[in-house]
Each structure stands twice: as C-alpha cells, then as structure tokens.
Image (cartoon, rainbow, N blue to C red; front, side, top):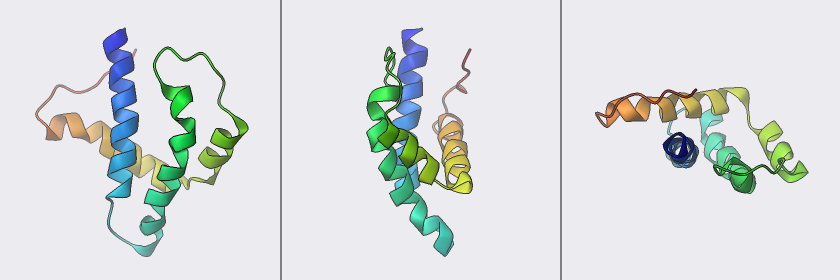
Length: 91
C-alpha cells in the first residue's frame, strides 16, 4: 500500500515537471504555469493525508484547462514504459 502511495506522489511530481517542460502550440505554453499553480495542492495529495483540499487548491485545479490536465496525466502514465519499468496499476 505504501508503494502505491509513493508511486502516486511520484506521478504527481513527475506530472508537474513534465508539464513544465512541454513544448508545442501557443495554448500549450500556458500549461506549465497552470500545472505549477497546483503546487498548493501538494499537502492534499501526499500519501496518508486525510485533509480536504483547500479552496485555494480547488481554485487552482479549476483554472487548469482540461487538455492540459489530460495531456499531463498521459505523459505521467507513459513514463514507466519509457523508463523500461512495469506499468503502474492502482487499486
């Protein structure tokens, strides 16, 4: 269970880094700053945290464009195979 939590935290952090390094169309250029604004959500995604997200976190999440969030998650989920690691599966 702890390794699943650690993996989820790692995926969140990797997603933030991946979003900050994305290149592409003009619209995608705002994605890194949108994802960086989610840093306020860090305390709520740490494994073992039972706290509810703050209004600041929820506001930051609401401000992230759907395409930005989805492409970041796709990048994060493709990293294990790119690193020759087994895929991540969550229960």
